[in-house]
Amino acid sequence: MATPHPSLPPRRALLAGANASLPLLMAVIPFGVVCGASAASIGLSFGQAFALSWLVFAGSSQVVAMQLMASGAPVWVIVLTGWVVNLRFMMYSAALAPHFRERSRVGRWVAAYLLTDQAFAVTLARIAEGRELRETAWFYLGLALSTWLFWQIASVAGILLGSFIPARWSMDFVVALTFIALLVPLLNDRLMRAAALVGGVVALAPQLPFKLNLMTAALAGAAIALLMERIWKRPTSG
Image (cartoon, rainbow, N blue to C red; front, side, top):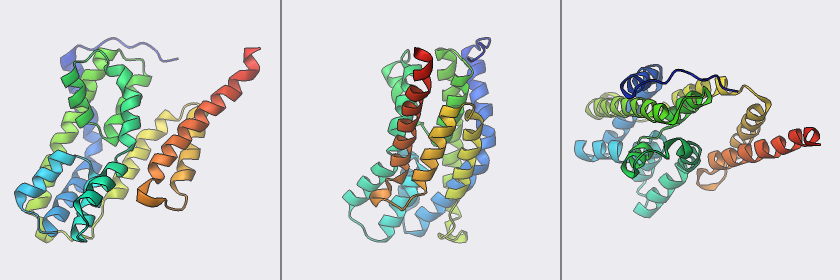
């Protein structure tokens, strides 16, 4: 059971979130630079490349979109593939939604736009500490806004330096390693460990069409956690 913490006022919670984003910059900045450089390398103008950065704000789908653009894929294929790659955010949103129910509709829209893998993992760890809803929302805003700002700065740097950075460079692995480092502290009970194990195995299985491995892995992990919870609780219920 989480130990209650003294509630932080909005400004301090916002600053706490901004501070929590700093360790994430080792992944955000290099990946943002490479995404910006890749956009410039396929012939996009500065305005087009920067618009892709702030409109999409999702590194993995940006990389996929640029690869498809470079190969001359139809627009509908690019949009559909980007949507599939980002399906995991639907589950992230469902997990965080109860903690933002007191926010306004506009506030929830902004929170959804700013959602990233890192922001989700760090905020989930914060929630596990037993923080109150209002503080969690302000913490998330500080974290997510800081991440967004540094991503845009890194993207602009990559666009301007695109001719000096090979488009074949890929920083996806840096983001994955950062997310793993954020995930490990959450594996504090057997349900979480079982979900992570099953999800990892499914994610590493032979590749499914349309890059559906990640979505399938997340669903499999959640399903096994629910199943194991029922099995483990059954003997004590009688």
